[in-house]
Image (tube, rainbow, N blue to C red; front, top):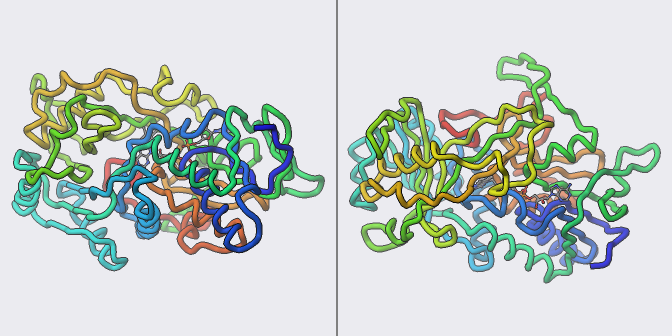
Length: 447
Ligand SMILES: Cc1cc2nc3c(=O)[nH]c(=O)nc-3n(C[C@H](O)[C@H](O)[C@H](O)COP(=O)(O)OP(=O)(O)OC[C@H]3O[C@@H](n4cnc5c(N)ncnc54)[C@H](O)[C@@H]3O)c2cc1C
């Protein structure tokens, strides 16, 4: 593609949010007669799916303790369901299986799912949970479980395939995707905060609106926009906590057990729901029975033909390096620093065996290939979707947003002058104003 010198809408990043925003914006422009996809330019420094969206496990669920997250996820699941084939989406459902510490939280999630019409079943009690799980997998054996939330919707999608599906929808409407070009800065007109042009490694591109959807790289462009490196957060007692870093990194731990994915079929021969287990039951090694942890732990897994086995992960690891010094590139499996090690394989495979007998003794099949990747998180680990500098929309999903395919649809509406009630709870001002989301007892920062 010849290097453009101007585009009405410049979207930075060809991951889930950049691509979804472009597709929906192109649709809306055409429907309203206010333009079309040729008004939109996506710029990516590498290529389509080069970031977190291209390595994500791909789990799509509603299970969040925060009401605003659940409402947003319900909208996102509708977008996934709108074209499962194009998005390589598998609507197998999702199960949150928990110990007593989380039972009440999960019961309240179920009650609110009923209120918003999101189909799910809640199983309450240890014996009831065991019976329910054995009805699906006859080798279920996880100890200390007292509740099961079975979401009938959701499931997972294949990461790269879904990005190419989205890119095709956008390109079919005339959107241009410029790859191998990095945005290096922003230029404002004199006397205005608004961005008049983006500077790139191949020249300057004038624009009217900018969307930043750069996943783990958000801190870099946030800094170039002169946005605050720290925030003040008002807690529920009205006390202000100053100088809280705006961004921090966690390393996500994921891997694949290289067995036939059919191994995980249900008793009636179907592909199973995604399984997520959180428990405080002691976890022992499946290799030598040594104690791995007595603290709260959690894992998730699903059979996945794309990854070639049983794929999933465990709790992420906090990155202690100061945020501006974290080496984001090379990203994902190419990173020498942020990939999983043998400890992850040992813990995760032992946890699989804790849950289901069919995984006992299977650690020898664990795929010893680099996996996992960095994620950039906000102060409360929930997304920031907001507009800055008059014409710059930042989509920062706090690294649990592969599932949030519908956010681009809502952002597209806002780019054309609308206001989205679903995005409102995720504005930046919530920190200073104390409009925080409730926190759960989950061992994961994103639940
Ligand atoms: C290992 C792992 C597993 C995950 N699993 C799940 C899951 O199961 N479910 C879930 O919901 N979420 C999951 N996530 C989180 C999810 O992947 C991310 O939240 C989401 O993909 C972020 O999408 P994005 O569009 O914001 O950014 P990305 O997909 O990261 O895309 C950003 C793009 O921006 C480009 N870019 C960066 N800087 C510039 C620049 N200056 N100029 C031009 N281009 C630039 C990059 O090349 C990249 O292609 C996972 C994350 C990881 C790391």
